[in-house]
Every structure is written in C-alpha cells, then in structure tokens.
Amino acid sequence: MEGIRINKFLSEAGVCSRREGDRMLAEGRICIDGEMARPGDRVLSGQVVTVDGRAVTREEEEIFLAFYKPRGIVCTTASEENGEKIKNVVDYIGYPKRVYPVGRLDQGSEGLLLLTNQGGDMEKILRSRYDHEKEYYVRVDHKVSQEFLQGMSRGVPILDTVTKPCKVWKEDDVSFHIVITQGLNRQIRRMCEYFGYRVTFLRRDRVMNITLEGLKKGRYRHLTKEEVMELKRELSMTKE
View 1 (cartoon, rainbow, N blue to C red):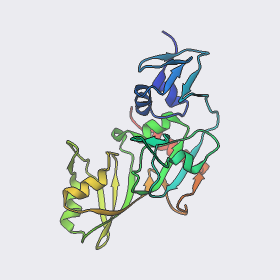
View 2 (cartoon, rainbow, N blue to C red):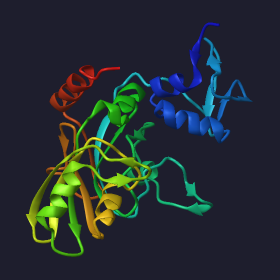
View 3 (cartoon, one colour):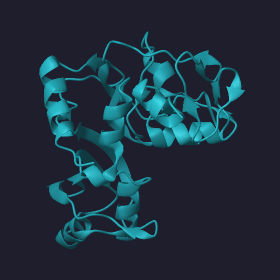
C-alpha cells in the first residue's frame, strides 16, 4: 500500500513525535477523512488528517523556539489532565502557528523548553539512545556530600532500571549541576530520593547546544540561525 504511516505523517507535519502520535491514536484523537485512525493506518495523497477535530497541514516554515518555562505550566498540548483543567505550555505562550514541546519538564520544575514544528528533529532530540545532553541546576534539602555526587554520577536504580552514568558537580553546600542524557519520568528527583535527598528547586539550563542564558522567565525566543545550524549538525550525527 502507498502512503505514509499515520504516526510518521504526524511527526513530519510537526504535530508530535511518533511515540506521542501513537498515544494520541490510542486516545481516539486522530481521524483520517473523518474516520478514527488506528496505529498502523496509512495516509494517502489527498486524504485529510485531523487532530482533535482540526485539520493538519504541513507547515513550510521551520520553527524552533526556546522558552523559559515557569513552575506550574504543564508540557502538553491538552487542556485537561486527569479530568482537571491545566495551564498547558502551548496556550501559555500563544504562538500563532502550531508548535509542540520537545519532551516534558515536570510541572514543579522550571527552565529551558524547546518547541518546534519539526517532528523528525523532535524525535531525535527526545530518544535517550541518542545521548543528547540536558543540563540542570538543582537545590536539595540538606548538605550535598561527595558520596552523594559520586553515587549520582555512577547511575542510580529507579523505575526498574539504572540511570546512565552522568556528569555531576557541586555548586554550594545544598546545590549542584547535573548533565543527563535520558528523560525518565521525574528522573533527577527520583535519583535524589534514592540517596535520601529531597529536591527543593530544579531548573533546566541547557538542551544540547541551546541554553537558557538571557531568556526571562515566561518568555520565548526564536533560535538564531547559528543555533539551528549547530542543532541540525548535532542531530545529523545521530545514529539511527
């Protein structure tokens, strides 16, 4: 059969990653020519794909945004979560064209979040097997010990797995910086909890070559041409 798989279509149209597309399909939010789509369906030339009732069209302009997410904002496009109204990031920034967050930054955390309409690039940034770096500044509830830092850097058993080794260095008595290449659910908080520490503040400062520097909380900016070129260069080196 000709055409393109529905999750790949959504990714290439800048709607979401393929994995997120599969989740949206399971929730019944995707239709092809008015019929509810299922995982594995293909989109043929001339067919109309809708997401939550809105038609998906391919956007010619490549959009890459850096946003300083405040605490309390949820990294999703949905208006509800678990039956409750939420402040989602897309509505919060109010960008005039369709963009989607690259991964998640939990509601209680703040810092750098990338948004784009480029589904293929989103996919490569998200997958942990690609080892793309994300840097955080973290404060905890009591004194940071050398044993704690060493333990964090070696890998920590959480969520039925062991985190990958990572870079960790001390800032002061109760704060440190950490660079990870995964994006497990509440990963850093869970890693700290394993050693008896509670995170009191968490901020993401960098994703790959993009940093939070100069960006005010609650504001976004377009990536510079140079930043996009370097981002694409790093992504082009990604092994499939």
